[in-house]
Length: 370
Ligand SMILES: Cc1cc2nc3c(=O)[nH]c(=O)nc-3n(C[C@H](O)[C@H](O)[C@H](O)COP(=O)(O)OP(=O)(O)OC[C@H]3O[C@@H](n4cnc5c(N)ncnc54)[C@H](O)[C@@H]3O)c2cc1C
Image (cartoon, rainbow, N blue to C red):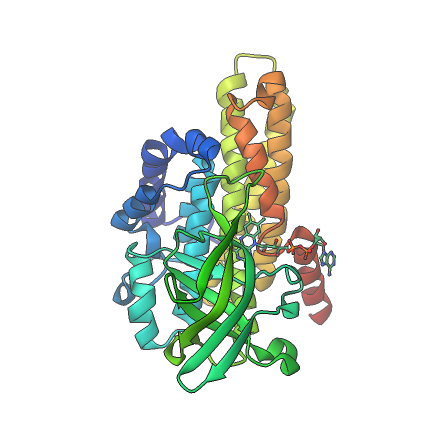
């Protein structure tokens, strides 16, 4: 077994950490208060090669591995969880779907600008009546000669409004249930594509979350991603990898909260055993996350491991940030303290890309199938 990051991975982590500390952290609290997305940060990440970490150079990527991608999300989330999820959705949901299922033309047209940081990506599955039960989707894609007409309403789309490219799931055949779902690449600005409600959230406030309304939105047939009927499979397998990103985000949030405790409380009478418990949990979550990322990179199955990582890391982020607020006392309950934001940000890691209950279902189903 090998528990050491390679020299290349270590150097990459330092590069992302420097960027996070110097360019993301200084404005993180303010952007959170103002619920403001900063496109300049994404542009800078594009210049630094962070927007296409695991994709090959022929598609504008860095040609690095999934561990490096997890390291980047972790480092960013350690100072700003909103920036972490922006990169996570962009890479492991939008980018991955295109990389894994796109045709050569689609990869050159859509994945390359995502990798190069010229375009931002989003992934739109959730609807009012279909969250955990994605098969209950109502958005419809009606086939016509040259493409499809999309009608329906999506909710809770991370990066929406700001993103340029959307991987969207819609039903091409309701009779076939989950086998009647298809995936589409939809460009912002396509006639019939409108943005809905912008959510006001408990945490990750500088990450925009909006609904999308499709009203007779015509998508050319070249923008069908994968085959007709493969949408559900694309959505679910993308989430397997996405969960590695969310686990890394949760590890970063927890580490950020622990670091704040150590920095602020070391001269006071803080509970040292609590710090040890926090650090131990974080290390376990980190190892699960890196293991899942490593399996993804080496071509091993990783669905169960990414569910382990997401379940454990998100519970860790929640517990560690609760403890951090407690340790700070009254100050921890104000937005003058660094841990208040971490506490609010942690909660969503137990909800999106499959709630903790759904992770337990995924894991137990795999155990029973084994
Ligand atoms: C900030 C934010 C950003 C998001 N970004 C995106 C995005 O970019 N793209 C996207 O498509 N979606 C996105 N989502 C949606 C997210 O993935 C869903 O919220 C999530 O899948 C849960 O669905 P739901 O909220 O409809 O909850 P529901 O499915 O209604 O579940 C409600 C509760 O019931 C539990 N539950 C449901 N089914 C079961 C079951 N079978 N067994 C046990 N318990 C169950 C759940 O665990 C939960 O506690 C985002 C959500 C948030 C909050």
